Length: 261
Length: 366
Image (cartoon, rainbow over all chains, first blue to last red; front, side, top):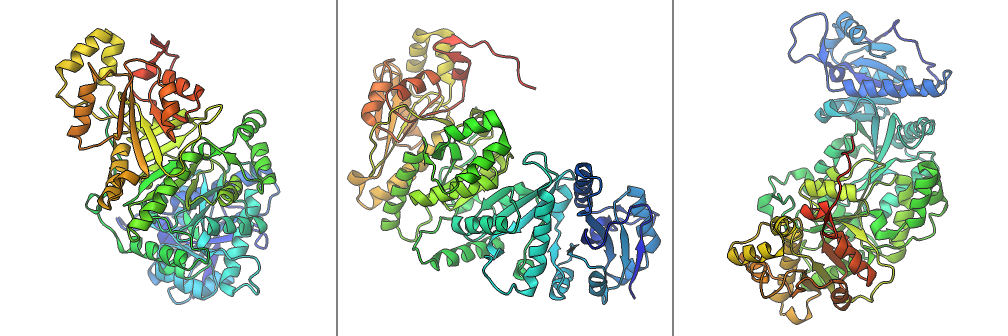
C-alpha cells in the first residue's frame, strides 16, 4: 500500500517545474543504535540533504520567485519503516529538514511510488533498490558511506564521462533520457551562479577513456547547456584515491552498468 | 628533516592491497586504448610509473591570459579562453621537458614493450573545466602523450598529487609548490628564460643543485650562519658522514632506475637520460662529502660539476639541460639570464636569504 503525506512545515514546490529527488529514509536517518526514542539519529545522507537545501536557498536569493528548485521527498522502501510513520515525520521536523512529502511504501511497491510522484532522481544506499528503480525507468544513484563526510554547503554531483553519449545518437535510449534531462536541469540551476562560490558543482570524471573522451564529454555536455566545473580524466588509474579527494555526493550515470560496478 | 613521500619507483610490495575494482578499471582502460584506431600508447599504471604533474601555466605559455585573469577577473578570463579555444596555446617552460620525457618513453617501450615503468605525465591545473577544452585542444595540437588530468576548478591540487603518487610537481605558483614540498612531494616553481638555448631532442638532460635540493640544507645553514671557513672545516671533518636527503633526491633516484633499464640492454652510451650535479661546492675541499653521500645512497650522477663559487649560468649554457633545479633565486636568475629553463625549489634556509643577506620576514599571512 502506498501513501503520501505532505510536510506542512515546508512550502510546497511547483510539482511540474521543480526537480523531484527522492531519498530513502534509511539513508537519511540512522536506525542502527536505535534506542526506540522519538527521534532517529543522523544518517549518511544528512550532508546531502543540507547541500540540496543550500542550493534552494541560494536559488531563491538570486530570484525569490524561482520555481526550478529541488523538491525533496523521503521514501520508505521496506515494511518495517512503513510502520514508523510518525517517527519519520517527527524526526524530519526535529532536524528542520526541507522535505516536502513523505512516501510510505513497502519493498514491493516503492517503485510505483516513485513513478506516481514523478521522481526524477532516486537516491538510496541499497544497490538492489537502485537497480530495481532503474529497471523501472527511474534514474537512480547509489549513496555510499563516504557520503557522511561530504560537504554540506555545496552539492557536488559527479557525471561519468565514459557514459556521456554524443548528441548524434538518435533515438536516445530510454535509460539515458532521465539522466540527460536531469543533467540539463542541473545545468540550468548552475547557470544562476558565478564561477566561484557556487552552491552546486558539477564534476566530470572519465574513468577509463583518455583526454579525447573527456574532451568529447565536455563539449557534449556544453551543447546540452551543462557547464562542468571540474574535470578529471583517470584513463585507468585507480579510482579510489581520486574519488576520496573529490568528495562528490553521488554519481550521475545513464548506464545501468554504473550501478553494477 | 625532509620526509620523502613518493618512493622513487613504487614497487608492488609498497602498496597495500590491489583490489579487484582497481584491476577492472585498468582492464577497461586497456581495452579502450587497444581499440583506438589512432594507435595511441596507453598510459602506464600509476603504481609503477614515474609520475610528473605539470600545471597548465608551465606546460603552456599563458602569460597574456593570466593578465586577463588578474586584471579583469575570472569570468572574463574563462570567457576569453572559451572564445579562443580552437587556438592552440604556445609552449611553456615545462614543454621541452615534457617532450624529452615522451622521447624516453618511446625508447623504453622499444626495449621493454610490456613494462609499466614509464613516465606518466599528468596535467594538474586549478583551471575551470571550461578552460580545459582549450587545454585539451592544445595538447592535441602538439600530440603530447598526456591522458590524465585534474582540472580542479579552484580547489587545491595537493590531495590529487598524493592520489597519483606524484614523483615531481611543476607549477608557476610558488605557494602551491611550497605546500607540496611540505607534504613530502618533490616540487619546483618554473621560470622561463628570455631566450632559450637549443636543447637535445634525443636525450633528457636534468641538472640539480646539491645542497637543499638533492641534499638537506644542513650544510647551507652552516655557511649562512657561520661563514665559509667553518663550512669547509665542517665538511672535511664529516666527509664520511652522508648528508641527509633533500626534496629532489627521490626524483634523481627514479631517473637512475630508468637509466639502469637502458644499461641492462647495453644502451649506456646511447642512454636518453643524463643527469648533472651543478654545485657551488669546490672539488678540493667540500666536494668529497657530496660524492660519498651519493655513493652511500646507491645513486649515480653522470656529471658532477664543482664551481667553487663561480656563477652557474655560463656552465649551464653549455650543459643545456631541459630543467635545472636550485633552491636559491640568485642562481635561478643567473641561469635564466643565459637561456636555461630553471626550477626553484623553495626549501631550506636559502629561502630566508637573498644574495647573502637575511630577508626581512613580512608578517605571516592570516
